[in-house]
Length: 289
Length: 328
Image (cartoon, rainbow over all chains, first blue to last red; front, side):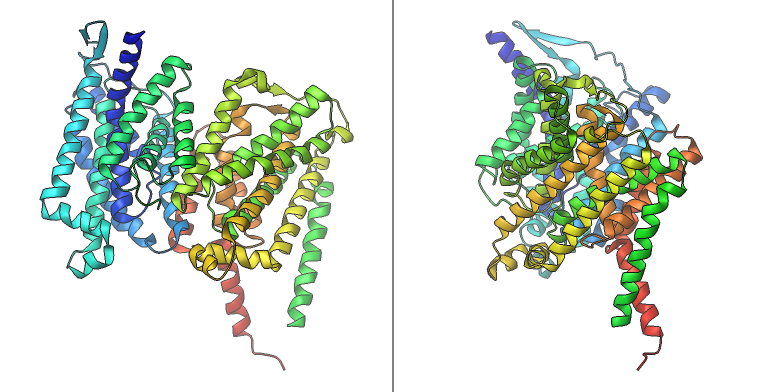
């Protein structure tokens, strides 16, 4: 009994690390640029396909291909901000919501056209390895993914709090007009925010590849998870998103263990609806918008 | 000005005449099938537009009400033998009632997070219908018993009959939109859509107006659900609560012209025609083509013509009118 609970918690925590990379990206974009990126999960998908093709064609380990997927997606993020999102920043919600939504639809269906709906997997030497601690089972691939995810989140936190650019991003998030008066170029800051967020999504994709299948619809579940985590962790709050993601990973895993194999998402939705009902401003308090 | 009104009335009458005789002239059941799709999705778009277009409450979860309408009438028909005509209204009422708690939750958030909450509620409803087999046939769904030609059970031998039912729904939707557009409610909706805080500051009871329009919009969407199930003789959670229904409802309105009476109709005609042409061109063999093209159209509209096709049409009309010398 105790062991099944602990095992479910470990599984959830490890996958929660990946959710954290995705939701930190969403909350960073929301905090700095004030838009919601509906396509975040699709960039996870792109990261997965990059790692899949590098592994398939050149035999590169998915963890190594992180150094390809992250920069590529960083550049994609800068381009998307500069050529698309910049044009719809304004008081009106509709273009912002539906631009990134259209982007998500576009990427998903392009993937469907180009790569078909087949599941793609990469088998690495450590895909089946696991540590046995007591009666518990810790898969190596998931442990590495979790560790790298936490490392990247830590690097981001240090970047936001110690570098000039990071501080400029936080300033722009707090008050865009005043930040502009202080000589911060908002578009440059927004480009970097989009770049970082997408690079994190790409990292999540590469980290997933040793133990998860890539297929065109794979991003949707990550987008949904990220949204719930971002609401739960108070919008725009990086640490909040991180903690909420880990909690959701655990909740999902316990849901699968005790309600049924396909019930993970039900638990997640229930968490979202309960949060909305009782604490719409997120668990940390703060503003609802 | 009177001249203009006369023109408007004349062109409406001409349109009505064309639309009414269309299924009598066109015999190809392939073509009628497309017309029915256009009428049905126009109607869903019109229902979405009431809330999403005028009040700018951008829902991507209208499949929830489509599905509730479809399931209510089907359960009433199969388990209790009640005619889908009655089931349709019952489905509308169920959807309306469901919109109260769903709206209570989702309206706590604004802007993009409202949108996300609506997605989540529709997905949660789909999961409930998938999971609980006792409720309604689980994931396999069920076929609707074919009674041959039974107009009282909303089953017809001729496809044209379905066409007229869908047309009737669309006319009802357009009439309701027209009435609301002209009423105090329409002005309140637009005020909320422009700036909710400002609207509240001048005394608009925004939560009440949003709740009411959500109820109307859900009711209408549910009618479409019943009709669709009767038309394809089949229901399962994946089709009834399909995310693509929610997407298409919003898409046709935005492409056609958000917050306008005819926008959803024009948007549907463009998108459905495009999709039909693509299908006949590519033979429907490549998955994802249709939505790829839809999303490109949507992006183009958002970036270059946020007022949609209706905006382009009225702009062109204004240019045409101003070029003509004014008559005494």
